[in-house]
Image 1 (cartoon, rainbow, N blue to C red):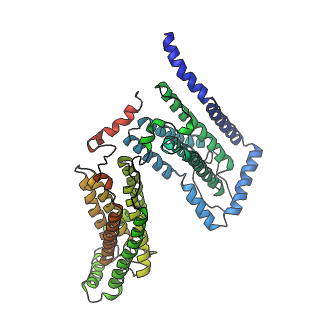
Image 2: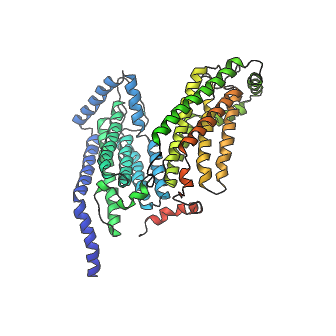
Length: 496
């Protein structure tokens, strides 16, 4: 029995010695938060004066500057629940795919703690939000602590600790500084936008630091109990997992001839734009008497004569599959999954350039051709861009065709055909919806097809997004192992 106690005492003692300063910092953050909480709860007069004075002073200087307000709103969104939940979810799924269940549990527990603490404390304190002379933004709910400041501290801090081992030592300090600056700026925007007091943000930072410290040191104790050495947090939570948490650990070069590839893409973009401009100008202004003109006249009129309230609603929802939010959401889910499974940046670059090229080609072509909308009722009302080519259809085509190009050769399972079907069904559905709603001519649809075919063909030729597959790259999780992914959390707490 004495030998067993000695075996347990040695790693625990080593852990305590190595982390005494860190535990003191965690305790200090917790005590600091408790002090701020008490002062806010009792409405301590000096703190009240500082909070309201800072809120009014910042509001007077920020509110008249429109561009600054826009920038502050963009920065504050980085700490919003939508972004935080997306980051945490993508990280957890990626870690499970890479079979890093313990790290996934750490991210889940740390993030869940922040989600629980924020509304609980807001309800407990029940502090009203600031009242400023010129309101810029408005948020419902109580004020203390700031959910954006707390969530960003916890989420970005947890992800930094998890992925720090994947970085070269010379970049780690820079990464810490960047994360610190982002968290600080998010907190600052909450005060500058007039939706939180200074003490709301400081309290949230202290609480987030304390909670993150508790979970990080609990993870380190977990490591020590399993015989792994206690390492400084500056090396991350799990240094042994550096290869597995690295986004693309086996990719030496993104492109073999990067400069030539960039030149080819730029030249290709110009040529694709020229083709779109030529075709768009022809069908818009010089196609009278051709079958193009007949289609563009007959099809919108035919749809307009058959509009019903039910079909109006259905077409509105289906056209949403091609709007900016849907396209961005699908891209932000698909790209991290590809990176986690196949460990290569090139397919992600292919999708990103596909969508960037689609957006720029659409905007440039629409401005250059300047085609009016069909002469029927436009159910979506006035639009900021012209009719040719259809941005909704082009975005849907480009995204789902790019996804199909990536997925199809990377698996032999039957469900790869689902992506091919989606690359056909979704764009056709969006196209029918846009024409039904009187927003586009049939030749606008043809322009979207031309844009997609030429641009994706160019990028496929230049980037070779599936080159790693033909060189023998295997996914991190094989096709037949997909069903075992659900067991990762169950195995996460087991000994190695």
